[in-house]
Image (cartoon, rainbow, N blue to C red; front, top):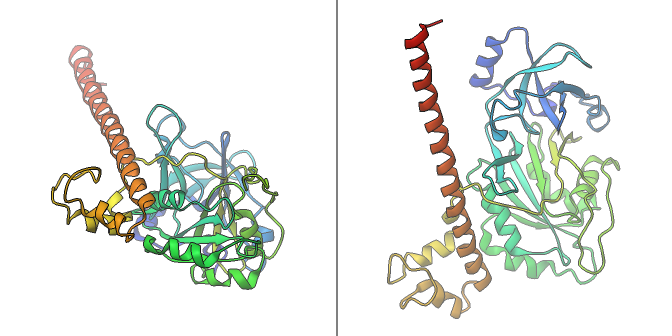
Length: 361
């Protein structure tokens, strides 16, 4: 494994084509994203990845204001850079992503935010304490579905008093994704995750504050690199010990992206709710009416399954709630795309009038 491959480099025709178009540039990976610019890594010491990766270089902002936020580099992206650190390094191209997890950004106006790019697996981390929330896990899985990323639910704090891992695993069986209960402080316990941590692989950790993401990262690294904090006893909520997304190379040859806890998990409108709730969709196909809303309509197969105890009523309610949110976000996305298309048409018309009046330049 080369130093570049240790941070996830892959040979693809699309990447090779861009490299050929920029003969003076070299590849680098975004390891941190800040308001003022980026930090990138061009290589890592394969023998000591956790110790060598902090030798980051700073690169300036990339086409800020010229492109939408989701089209600009995010942590995990591969870019081409020219120049040298610390002041002249600049990003000249963004390499095509083979995967990305996105969410709707906070605020009234529609925007998308890339959580992580070019990743193979997403560990949805949730504690087996008051943090345990199947509905929030379903929301995370909805955002991940269709992204080209393998979701894995990781239930931490299995060593805590009162943690009922068996009950949690049974409750999450309907999700249809791998679920593992671990003690995030114990390397032997988290060995169950090694399947997704092979050489050249990249994993992102998502979950609420205090779920144990940074603790899990430290255990996989074998050193106390990420700051961790205690959770409140009253509600098991944690502080934001991780304040920004950061990509770190692991001794296993994989890379891991730790992320801050996210309070808002808004859909982008591109999600497919049916894909995440296949069990409920299968029942819905048996309803008497094709447009059944699974409320008070006669012959509703979904409601009948809930009454028989075959389906969790909370899961059905979340299915309906998320479906409405995705539909609303899809309308906002369609409006935004229509506005962009209209702006392009108006821009072309204006250029044509200027050309006719003043001639082409």
